[in-house]
Length: 79
View 1 (tube, one colour):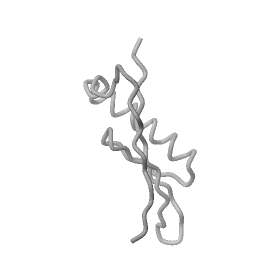
View 2 (cartoon, rainbow, N blue to C red):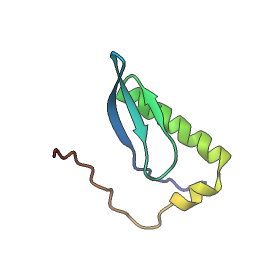
View 3 (cartoon, one colour):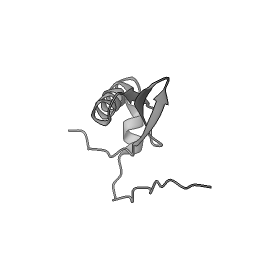
C-alpha cells in the first residue's frame, strides 16, 4: 500500500475577462488547475496530481515525509 502524502496547495482567485476563476498550484509539485469555484479547482488539482504521478512515479517518493512537517504560512501583505 502506498504511503499517504501531503501536498501544499495555493488557491488564488483571479479575474479572466468578466469571469472569476480559481487557480490552484503547489510549491511541492509542478501541477496547476483552474475551476469556476474552490471545490471544482481542488477536484481538478487532485486529478492532475494523480496523472502527474502516473507519468512520474519517482516524484511521489520524494514527497513522502517520515516526520511531521510544519505547513508554510501564506499571508497577503499590502505595500
